[in-house]
Amino acid sequence: MGAALAATALVLSGCQGRAQPPGEGGDYPSGPVTVTAPAEPGSGWDTTARAVTEALQRDELVTTPLPVQNRPGGTGCTWLTTMMQQDKGKDDQIAITSLASQTMKARGLCEYGPQDATLIATLYVEDFIVVAPKDSDIADLDGLVSALKDDPQAVTVAAAGDDTLPFALFAKAAGVEPADVNFVNYDGGGEQTTAMLNGDAKVAIAGLSEFRSVLESGDIVPLVTFAQKPLLAPFESVPTAMDSGYDVTLGNWRGVYGPADMPQEAVDYWATTLEKMSTSPTWEDTVKKNQWAPEFRTGEDAQSYVDEAAKTVEEGVKETELGTDK
Image (cartoon, rainbow, N blue to C red; front, side, top):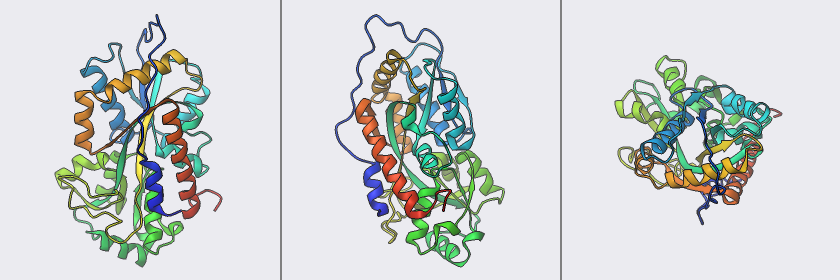
């Protein structure tokens, strides 16, 4: 599987999903609904959870409380397992999911994936970016490739579960065995940034939004993005891997899911409400600010999109030998 083909599968375009309205006469939700980011503050999951709740509340789409909680562990696997085993059939929990959960399952690191829970909607696709501290001896893309070729174990790469796949594909395209890359797992951009600034990691990879504020402050610098086309200002000068001669383009979809066997009334309510949110002023402003590519889908349309992404991830894991049985 070519890495460029992977991106095609993950950023498919087409008819957007349309949710069915909630059941007639329903009074759901009658109380608070907890929104879970299955990672630390500063992660892409956390950014998404808080952006969703802000848009729903600021634009008055939901009137019931929407407390956000961070439940890190296992790159999303810990909370997904909890949702599968302890919250089955409940209607007072929703959570953020993404490519990470598919990568974890494909690598044999988690029993469950998004397809095992109740997928409610996909929201957007975010581009991956590789960064380094501003005073690092790795100052640009050529320096990164040279360092990897010279001694890949010396280049400590801070990466969450989904981040390993695009970086492994990049390493392979650069002539470095993915198995030789020194990945260190962190749950999200906040932890990854701290690791770099403390000297515990040479570089890090995550979604652009996870590093945006630190990039803008100048404490870290961008090295390469796996976007299909150049990023927008102020990151338009960041080289893309493809334009630099490395056939790697990969995006990270994110969405919302509920527990297995979530009541249909709750599924319909959130699908409809999130569809309204997807065109709300607050959400559209957040999407633009973070350079997210809208990818709103619900129902069978969302499921087909996620299933296609899962196949792409499985192919990528096999190609880079990231599975636990290699």
